[in-house]
Length: 429
Image (cartoon, rainbow, N blue to C red; front, side, top):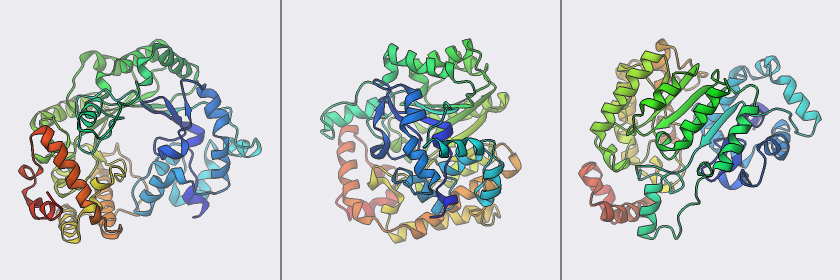
């Protein structure tokens, strides 16, 4: 891979803290390769400035990092990867890499780190803050570390032996340690909060109030919610910030969303979706629908894209689903893949959109570019399904998993997707 295909600004501007308090230089990095430090026993400043100096050195040397495989896969298929998104934040465009890198206001900082063996004096200006796994839903493709409800169910079914560790944000000492770092950070630009369900975690309000008290309201606040919660106090706090990015999690407007995001009722989720769309438009907040196409939802995506166009909202399928592997769309056999591709291509044809996959990131705030933005997303999934290896060997794992869940939940996927009857029964359903 060339330097322009591996270089990323994340280790100079960005950090993530996970639900268990683990520290990482990137929200997209692979857990097992980088999560060696925890807020419980390490200072955030030391981690960011010193402990990841080797990662900065590797990036400056043009090395492809194992921890960055998710972004490399997205780049391969023309999807707007986290790497490209982070580069854009510092004014670097991958289709004009060399010139835009040299003209970036961060170029001197990169050169300084090269001379100081990867060290930086900076503090993060961009954060992903995972507050904990406290959640009122149990999505079938989720993980116990992100859903307390799913964790209890997994333990009951014997999928896990112990519940995940208590989240760091429940500890007043650790929460204060984190907030004080934010207060010492001179140039905060963006803080994105995740859960669990962000809006039910008390730490979310606590952090917003402290930022307001510290007069750091020029930072943009981003969060993702599962369309089950409305809190007027949180709305009032968000109104005090210069920018707000609202992420709305829903997989599809098709009734299979009931199954995927159990026990959410899709009709109620639609009503909440419209409520968030209205308030976001009224406040000029950036709003995006967050979806994670899976083996069960990818056949019914286009209604969601029609909603996005009708309501001037973007869609961000953040990454190709990695785990659980049996939920990947590539588990579908060729016949089903072709049906999905035909559906997605028909949507593009209906809207008379030509290939956008080679286009650089478009302005997500510009209504005139919305169709192009949605088309990029759709065309990436077409390419993904056309080129990624067959994984139908995972179908028995999928069937075994959902049968155990369904026995506990008293439902069946075939009530939502009868067209999958032959496929699933052939794998033991």
